[in-house]
Structures are given as structure tokens and as C-alpha cells.
Image 1: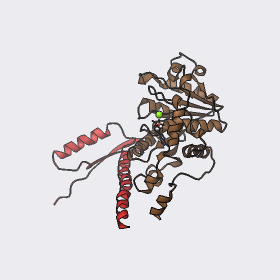
Image 2: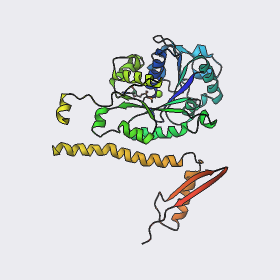
Image 3: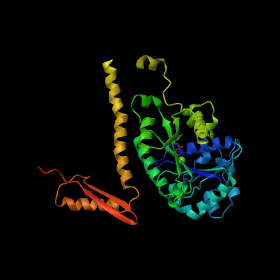
Length: 268
Length: 84
Ligand SMILES: Nc1ncnc2c1ncn2[C@@H]1O[C@H](COP(=O)(O)OP(=O)(O)O)[C@@H](O)[C@H]1O
Ligand SMILES: [Mg+2]
């Protein structure tokens, strides 16, 4: 049986899809059979970020409606063995994902994979609810910014009450904090919430910190999960995140700015 | 470098202000969590009723639902202004 991991946040544009793609690719690279499922009905994007947009024929909703079987809809990644994606539907019907449909697709995926990664849409409506409902673990993606932190706290409340594990009284969903778009220089100047601030407010375990990085945009331009760009800061940060998730102890990096000569002169 | 320090402390305040505001709102929202959906509306209406008689602040009314065994207790706290 696979572990089902939801990548969620409440707020939009914080890095859920970037994280889902990188995390999924990292787990597959580590040898685990991994599938990344796009729950963002109407705003399919995971396919673009993972570079398989031209190979989409059938989607999640087609499978739920019985218009295609799961194997027809799954896209195998060409670079990483054992990595697959299930694209979202572009339908405008937000109710296209049914509870029973999602449950049956996730159960089938869970029986044939080691990890099922659910890329949640923004908000706390139906799509986000279904993406988290069956989860065993959650990556709560947060930016160092007031509205993102507040929304993450809302989402933590939902994870502990509106999920299958919560409703059945099982062991709670394991929550991991992933802080993205972290600009160490701005934290140093007191302009941006620090990691300590965010951890203190949300009080959950910190899985990792991804710096604000041009590597993310470059990777998305090319349709390559940023974790594949081994030489970049963001790629390395995601690699650390996957390793920590798998139980390896790794120090946090990219928390302080690399000071240039100018910075050193001024800060002493 | 008092001049530079001045700007630095201005900016220090920006992140710590964010943190303080977050701590307050998150604590309040956690308090409302898990309660029935009608709680916020109930809270507003009770506030309006009280205001027909006394002038009170926006946050004068606190409502919580406590579970004691199989019994739910609605706890209502009203803070009245200091009388002069
Ligand atoms: N660490 C980062 N550094 C710079 N830009 C980032 C980073 N993470 C995400 N982004 C950018 O933020 C935007 C939103 O990211 P995305 O993963 O689509 O968020 P979400 O799925 O939460 O809406 C994208 O333009 C992406 O390139
Ligand atoms: Mg997204």
C-alpha cells in the first residue's frame, strides 16, 4: 500500500505544483514507484511543469466518468523511471471530481505505487478538500508572508478534522512544513518573516526551506522538475526535502544569505 | 552609524509587526475551530442585542463550545466596559 501525500496550502501561487513535481521526481529517483495527481480541475498545470503537456490524452475526470481507464490516462515520465502523472481535467465543471470517483482512483493507484502525491488546488473548497481527504501525510507549502501563514494555519485545522484519518479516529495526518520562496537577504533586514517566526506560529515540523530562486522559473520554462537541476539552490533544497522525508538527517541550507563583499563591508 | 541603524530598526519592525498580527489572528481563529458553523453569526447577533443596552467593543463577546462527555456546553463570555 502506498502512502498518500497531499501538497496543500490554502493560498494560491505559493509553490504547491512546483513542490509536487520536485517531490514526486525526487521520490521516483530514489527508487519508489511514484504518481503525481493533479487535483486542480479547470487549471491543469502540473503537466506543463513536468514537461508532458503534449502527451495528455485522457485525464482524471475521464477516468472517474469511465471514459478511459487509468492506464490510458497515466503518463510515464521519460526521464525518471517509476514516475507517472495523472493530469487534471480542463473542464469548467468544478463538481467533476466525485468523492467515490476520487476514492476509487486513489485506491487503485495506492495498490500499484509506493507514493501517491496529490497536488491540491488553492482554496478550501471541494477540490482542496478531496485532495487532502485520503492523505496519510501532508506537505504544507507556505511563503514567509502573512496571508500565506494564516491560510496554512486554516489548512492545518482542516487536516486535523476534515480528513479520513481524522473522521475515523486513526493516527492523524502527518504534517510537514515546507517554506518556499524564502529570501534570506530580506529576512536578514527584518523585512520578511523568518523560519523561526513561521515555525513558532504554525508549530509543526519543518521539512525544508526552498529559497526564492530563478532556477524555478528556468526549470518551469523547460518543463523539468527543478529537483533535476542538481546544481541549483532550489534543486538542492528539494533534494534535501526528499531525503529528510525518507528519514535521512540533513542540515538545513540556504537559511542565510551568501554575503558579497559589499554586504560584508556594511554588516561587519 | 546611527543613520543606517535608523533604517534598519524601521525594517526590523516590519517582520515583527507581521509576526505579532499573525499570532493574534491565528489564536483567535483556532479558538473558533471545530465549533458549529452558526457560531460566528450567533456571536454577531448577541453582540447586537447587548449593544441595544450597553456600548461594548467589537470583541466583547466570546463564544466557545466545550464538550463534556456526551454533553455540549455553549460558553458565553461578555466583557463589559469599566464603569467610571
Ligand atoms: N522557490 C521559488 N523561487 C522562485 N519562484 C518560485 C519558487 N517556487 C515557486 N515559484 C513561482 O511561483 C509561481 C507559483 O508556483 P506554483 O508552484 O504554480 O504555485 P501553486 O501551485 O501553489 O499555485 C510560479 O510562477 C513559480 O515559478
Ligand atoms: Mg498549482
